[in-house]
Length: 206
Ligand SMILES: C[S@@+](CC[C@H](N)C(=O)[O-])C[C@H]1O[C@@H](n2cnc3c(N)ncnc32)[C@H](O)[C@@H]1O
Image 1 (cartoon, rainbow, N blue to C red):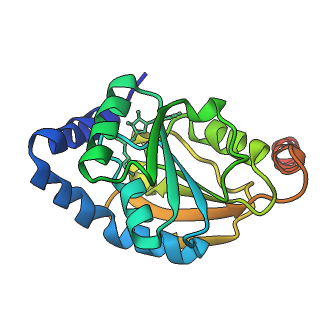
Image 2 (tube, rainbow, N blue to C red):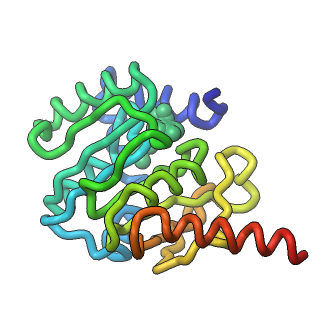
């Protein structure tokens, strides 16, 4: 079930189709966040990016493409959202570079992508993260936006204390604390199983 914050954000993003200048608000909001994430992951034109949780106005995906030239595939698990996102991408003449599909992050394969971006409002975030790591090739950079502690009840929990971090960038936002980068290692399943085991071990030993 969708939570309140996702409903509010989607409603605001739907406005972009009717009142195009509203896009500037999202553009400004995400600008520094995306600059930091591009630096963190060293994203280049040759990268192939998957954005999970694009919303009706997929600003993150659009800016990632505009700023790096990389091709971006966006998914969202809400049909109406996807239809609106496709119309917005067309309006920007970006269909060649930004595609939008109906899919759930818990049920995707990330093997075709070198960078995967998981939006703040994606839910259930830990399961989506595990699915991405389990299906991506070694070297894939997985970026996850994580909420500030005092806003954490509004978002799907993401327990990163048993996930190896390959970089982190903090943001100056009320609700968004940081983006964590995790680089997929080893063979399929190896890493998530290892982290799950150490988590179980921690629980048993305390
Ligand atoms: C409102 S958007 C915010 C993203 C923002 N527009 C951006 O550019 O970063 C968050 C979206 O994530 C989608 N979402 C949440 N959980 C998801 C999941 N498991 N798989 C795919 N999409 C998901 C919601 O349907 C919602 O539209």
